[in-house]
Image (cartoon, rainbow, N blue to C red):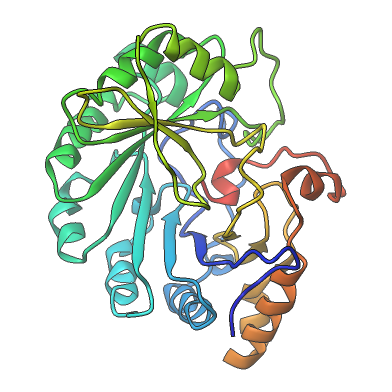
Length: 328
């Protein structure tokens, strides 16, 4: 059995949120006062997460990305990684983190053969970093960046391009790929900040970002990306690393989508922009068997919307959740 939607797309990638909590308060992710944190009992347990992942892996999911909130905020997160590492049907276990708590775990992550780390960092200036994240942890995060760049882990930097905040640093981020074998990825800003789309003086979409970069470099080579890649990737000649752009808001990457999401409270999402399809946590706690889970996953994925615009149009409410609630 294989998870396939009615458009013939095979689903092989799970984004699983470990927690809705975060130690930062990034402006594009949540309001300054934070979000309404759910009670512990509402979160999926690690045992439930392991079971969900195992059942999905038996249906063809071979790649899992653990997100939050900030996954390292949750106690004993390493224990979950250790258990997932025993699942031989998983080819990749990846993590998205803000880097504030990860440095002491890097050696362990290498031991567990974690494939890649996506480090969220939106400014290379301490004051601006504090303004974006509403926390003073820049030095800590930048030190972690340098440690990760030296490690055996594949390192990707996630940079949310924010009109009026950090667009003047785009080229500085590209330059980080000159001497380091890293992938810098610029992400279009989305309305998942707990309030909805904010007003912007300029719309920094995929086209504007790539045009801005091309104006600074005489030659940029496009790279062949995997069919289901979320980013369009490029390399500057003689640079060790690469850069890419993720058109998350303009949604030109939906055709080959191979992803599903499960939030920290167990909400199954076929698409980032849908309102959630069903709660797998409640289904499990009501006594569902593994076969029950498989049947539910298969029937739900079959109805995956064609793209993010269809998913958004089918919602009962506007897109205004916090990315910390959804899973980054």
